Length: 273
Image (cartoon, rainbow, N blue to C red; front, side, top):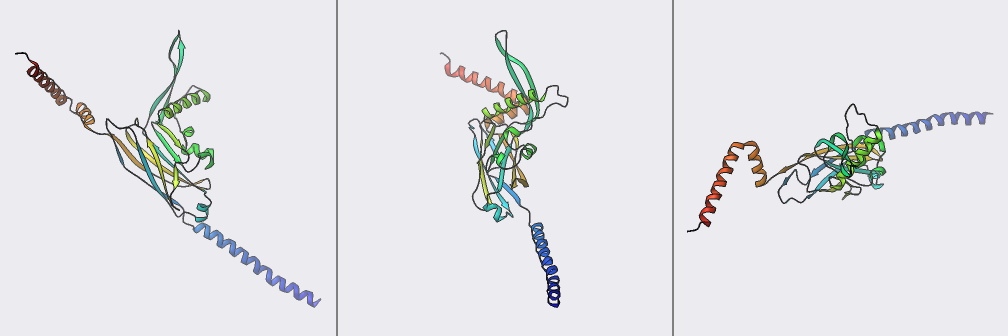
């Protein structure tokens, strides 16, 4: 009996200590996870301005980026995903449906969409559906099918008809190379550096474009950033256009003077003696 009592006493002394060590280790792990510095993402564009001239045929835009404070284990597992988007100015666009009326094809119906990006170029490390859930893709407009197309507040059409017009608008934009998607266009060139190349088409809309980057960690959005790109007309053609718009009186007087000069020169060069 004395030996049994001694064993019980030793067990009672050891068990609380073992439990306290396990609790301390668990608390230490939680503290380490909580104290981990969150990831950040930064991007830089190969150029901040693109000049559109008469012979402009499109250009490639390279976007470099870096992931700061990346978890080495997550990086080795390939569970970091990056999306890079170049979105053009927003405008009101109309999608029209053609039909045959008395043997003639003509517009028979239309749907107006508001706050629509005129251009949308996106690249990612892998297909968007493999990076995160559909709700996040829709919320952030990641991918051409998830681009938000606003309608009027009091819309009388049903959702199926609106979706049909929206799909037609996206399809036309894709055919014109204004909407492009590259599922493997973002590549890591080191442990923390990545690059993406976006093909800007010749018919790119003018104005300020916004470049955005999103960083996902195991399907969860952890960081995002953005930059801007200005696309403007340049060259003698643009200067003449600006003069005609802003200084119309002097532009008209100059045009008349140039016409008189050309007429006089033609008379002098081709007159018959």
